[in-house]
Length: 88
Image (tube, rainbow, N blue to C red; front, side, top):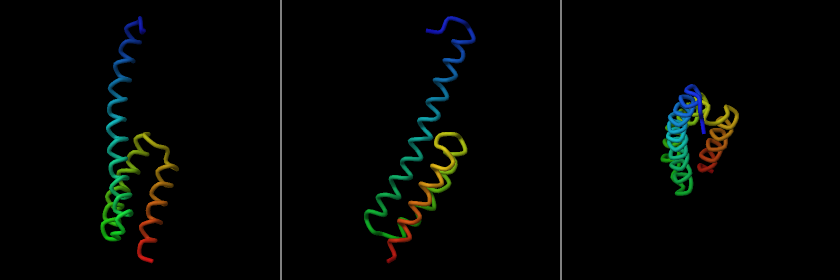
């Protein structure tokens, strides 16, 4: 347990930041799930629309440090590939 005033403040800041990060991660995962569901249903237009909405969310999460930049790029790339494959 923190004893010093600065350590107590740091603990409070960490708790607040953790809540914000949880919310951002959850939001990103929700957008990812919407794309996955659209792909599973086989609806190309819905999947493309969901991907278009999800891509900025994923990249924003990377910018905020929720996920690594390369991880975000990989997720977007793989989803785009799967959405593109729906046409064929």
